Length: 183
Image 1: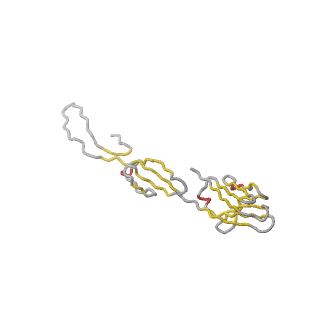
Image 2: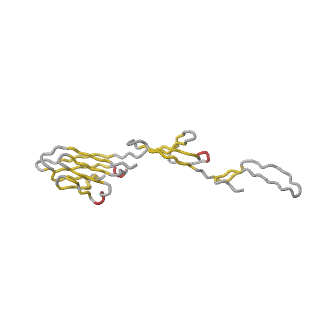
Image 3: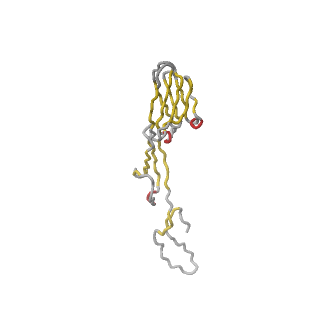
């Protein structure tokens, strides 16, 4: 499920909006323009942000909408409003995007498996439930199967038989393997 995020700033101006703009602050402290408008209304978003960002500014409120929030959206955002009359309004907000906590549980015994999976053995084969939780909404879950392939091996002894003359006899050779061996 994709989540959208709306950042809202409310304010009281001495006058009306002349310019409203949003910036994302880079690691160097520089502001990169997301979009701006002259006068109140829909903010024109820069081409590199148009796919997932929407914005508007009024005389009492500014909104920045981020659609389908991604980890790369974790940043500091600045809203600037220049009104008629006196003053200048500039406010920052930091957006932290929680990376999901992933849990893998083997359903046969409810044992929790640590990620990443390493050193997988034959006994690890089976059905698992994967749970992803980022603390924002209900966790997402899905079931999966782990199939472990391994070399063929003899698992026991066949029987010793004495065959007389032209008598047909079937011999057995107990084996195990995945995929199942053809003997």
